[in-house]
Image (tube, rainbow, N blue to C red; front, side, top):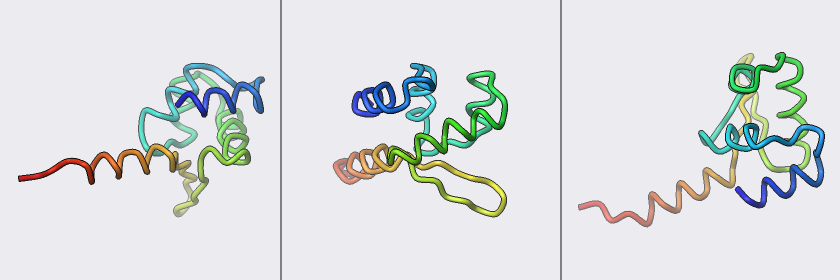
Length: 89
């Protein structure tokens, strides 16, 4: 999360906020509706934020049907490693 914070603050200072960073790590994926609701921004602004973050390689944009999903692949990888580290009886 700290790496994301540093990169967004450095490469995208106009859009950086702690709330935005928290949204990116709340779930393994996000979509524009999450930003619209939690940041109180327009759909266009939310898409611009997510596309900008995607362009610098922090999230991966995937279109499924008519909806764009933005996958936090670093978070997904951490979750997979944690799952594999747990010993189930």
